[in-house]
Image 1 (cartoon, rainbow, N blue to C red):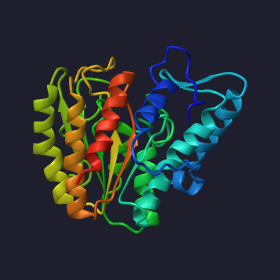
Image 2 (image 1 turned 120 degrees about the vertical axis):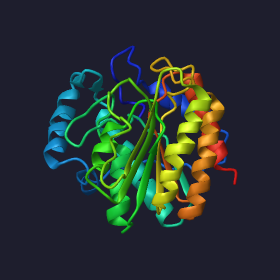
Image 3 (image 1 turned 180 degrees about the horizontal axis):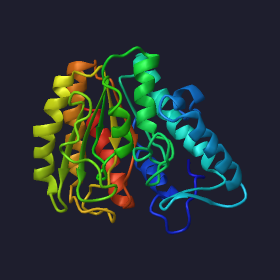
Length: 298
């Protein structure tokens, strides 16, 4: 995934993933190589015509970088990165559901939560977490899967998938107004299976935790998921250059503890997290390691 190369100066560069990998180096983690996502898994979210169009773009990108939308590019190394990013999330679900461990973290790029079923968007090409969620529902015969997204940008693509799938809950905290402009509190999906908690710029830790405690955690508790997936974006940190949520590193550890508690209550601790945003390297590395360290403490 380090070989996926947007243009020089692009916010979503390979140094992001390297910073996370370096930060996790000393942790006692079982590391696994990310496999390619299967066509079957991808097509639960992305129609075949979209995948075929991407294949044509991947072929073109072997000779020159291709721009898919104003912010989203692919290069010669992108195909493998994109298929493995989605594949990591599917494999993590399989491992957790098989009881090999109760938690997994997918250190992947590019991110995925902005990708709509038929269009790339906001650095994202396949919607990694949505692919994993629908795989969990269909391949593992689950009735209730939840995606919690604390990336500072609203996961519009994941919400689109949830809006047509009542077995899937999507809950998001995010800055608003901000890209992509979705995620209003009155966007509630099918039978209230979408929960949005938009917050203004400068909201800070106290307001963010309060919104999580009042809107996200009670809804997640009531849904009683059999598996929790987390779109773990760390760009709500106060150091991040792309937003102004003003969170501290400890806030991500707090989120880990709260989500772990609900996973233990409802689904034997089954929780799969996948990397989304985070564009200040030091803040990203510190936040990701704090989040994982907190998950490992019961």
